[in-house]
Image 1 (cartoon, rainbow, N blue to C red):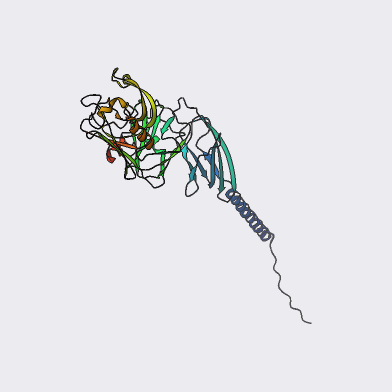
Image 2: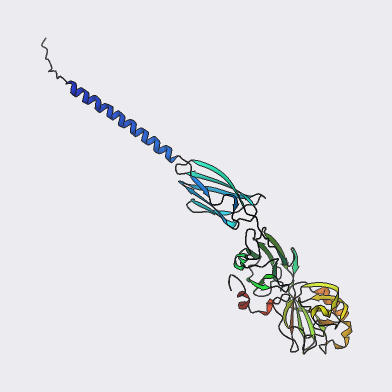
Length: 400
């Protein structure tokens, strides 16, 4: 058999070393690539870095809580105070930030719990806390009408503050009025008859009967400004509007008329204030503030010397300066023909008893007459109805 012999090639030792080195380099490169890939995956799997803008035991009150996330995004943030209350807030569209809608109150401890997700999907939860500095002065408020009451169609929502309010716009923004029928209205600031700061919410026109009204005064964490102090709580109240009752008082005709839902209910002869001086009656629209029954009326308390000091029945207060509608049997001869009182609207016992039983707090008394001494002021009871709608809106700290 014939055999063919293939030529053999000899490989030099130098060539073998080069091949070996090349293989080692390739293996090393493969290993390096694998390590680099693992390192990148590890980096992208880290949780987001979350920061809160407030910290420590002496954080500033009146600040928004702000939470930010880096290398990831926030999925949920909860802020609670030491009394169980919550500060609601909003996440930004990209999830990088969260801010509270309300501001921190003084003297409170807050806990912030943040849920987040890293760029690689790693989830994390972080909890931190801080406390705010206590208030050196606290402001409070009182309001009319009373919670759960039913009032007349002219009753404004009236808020009086214990201490001065310099930051009127900031406070007004937190006074939320909600009505069952979207009644148009506005806040207006004034100095109360007591000398304190006061803000009233008045509809453009008289309320519609049956309207339900709610006030949410979200003041916790709001600073009144210099001399006023901080608000450390929220307030809320509600009331309902009753029948449309209007009391018209014509002091030229010396006649009082009560209408209810457009129908005349009573017509009463009266005597108003003696013309020509301080004893004359005020004119304009005022509001029945309270039904006080039998009270002592003393002229010295309203700057009229010792003119009178007597017990008066069926007293219906119309102003802080002492204007009432009431029984005045001592003036019987003047009812229906002469204004001869010390400024009040007087009538017989029987008529006063009937009117007293028919009217409710919040009913308007529309007083007119040539023998009056002037227009009743907005702060003298609830005289704001004597301002035009534009002038009333101008008394708002936000729209004036």
